[in-house]
Length: 313
Image 1 (cartoon, rainbow, N blue to C red):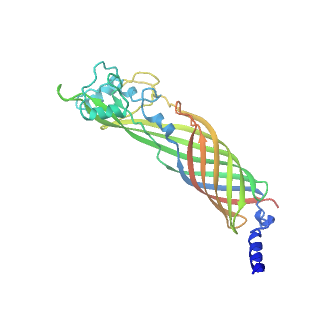
Image 2: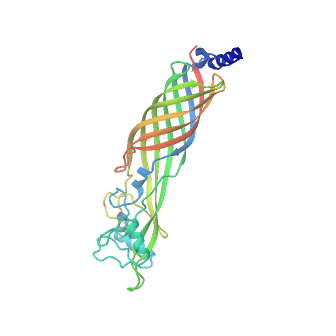
Image 3: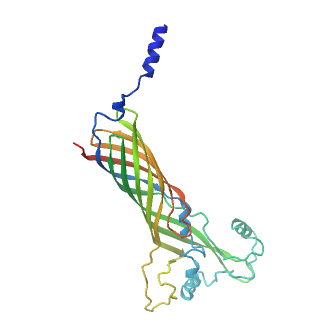
């Protein structure tokens, strides 16, 4: 009985793979590998606040409301009712739901405020992100790589305008408006990867390194009833006047950001030439959309197909 037990324990202690097999000794994976990525990118909502139209933002709703001609069009669209704006020395006499709105925006009795209630929690929609991957393996388990992925991100929200009453005796009303932003983002990663064999065709892998990104704002717009306006100042502080030859400019907003990343997943090695690598990548990075450029986390869930085309002979 003791002999059988000792034999079982000895068998349990035997390594699953020899040192050579752990390094995929049956394959020659040294050299260049190329791959394509496809996955879902989840951007941190911090930089989405760039699009919320607040007065301190480069793009703000007041840019439209302060223009005499645009404001008059909106005034007509709102059935000839004014939008109440800061500074107002006399607040609207809210009752009922008005107190709830004031509380949600941390307004105290006697505070002055823009009578626009901005979206407080804009966030990006998740989006499909394709990409390219190139790697040089020093041996069968370790290499350095460069990866580039593309994402088009969108964010939408609702703001509230406080407009005057139909009569002088009823309280002001809230009218919804919609705001949206769109941007392009290119993510570039430079790093090192390491594989650890776990099965006959599987390895777990870890990748880490430096991250760079290039972000460009494509649009930032509002919609009030049937009227749509860009809140990007394409006239560079020239006051818009209809039917005049104002020069408009292509405004670039965005720039280069940077950070770090950590990536992990499972490699399915079908043969010496082809593998499938599903994984998840965690970014800690800054996006160049001032002032919302604090470092924050984003995620990328992907599947990568790898082709080993030029192994060493």
